[in-house]
Image (cartoon, rainbow, N blue to C red; front, side, top):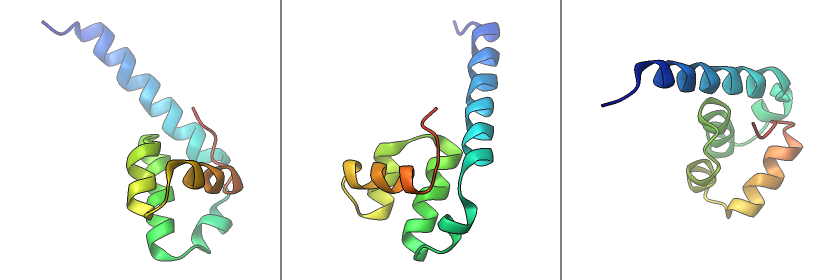
Length: 76
């Protein structure tokens, strides 16, 4: 059975991480990117999922991670 307290704590930490990524991201840089890249960066901000974000962008994870750094999105 799922521990409800642990689940609530995990959800809260997920929300906190998302807020940190949103707060520190360079939104001007993100909005200046081509649609496919912008969507992938926004997906990463919302989920923290580097693997799937890189796939959305059509990039290798290493290349997408460099783009994440340029966009000043923290890895939380």
